[in-house]
Amino acid sequence: MPRRIIPFVPELHFHIYNRGNNHERIFFEPDNYVYFLKKIKEYLVPVADVLVYCLMPTHYHIVARVREPQTSEVLKTSEVSTAMMKLSVSYTKAINKRFQRVGVLFQGQFQAKPILTSEYLLNLCRYIHSNPVKDGIVADITQWQYSNYLEWIGERDGKLVDQAFVQDNFDTPNEYRKFVLEYLRSRQLPEDVQHYLNSLDR
Image 1 (cartoon, rainbow, N blue to C red):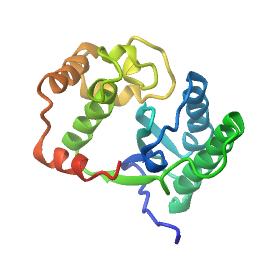
Image 2 (image 1 turned 30 degrees about the vertical axis):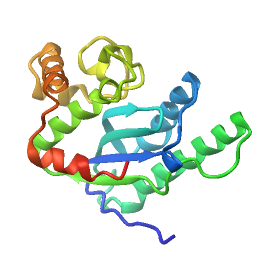
Image 3 (image 1 turned 90 degrees about the vertical axis):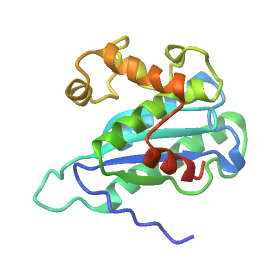
């Protein structure tokens, strides 16, 4: 399969996601989620700031802002792609070893799409954080430990979150909580955001 080229523009947010091959699980036990987060910190964080993440049994979502290059050179598209490739390969090897399995774990390469407006970005954030309730895994969104929703509402002191972004867009943590709960009650998003979500191959 030819390598897919994605122009990861510095300072732009991207929705990065993938799912299990044949819609099968990619996380089987709590330690798997923790290991995946460790690999996000190891590979992705050096080249991008994580805004939102949510790890689900069969798929994951990450929203990240590509960092400005450390030198005057333009950030190479391959840096983020390489980070995600290393993350995927490392995680797959660990899962295969842990469960004595062989073969692919993910359904092809990760997907990444740019987020071009603030309204789009904020609605995508609350949609991603709502996934565990929307998919029927938990009844209360705060019960799902494998997203950074708790960091957004000030109930956990995790490192994979852009607190400056949260504070710039919501006066209080409770304001974001209400924003998310409003979606969970109505299941309504702006038409363009809903159209995008319907188009996701996941």
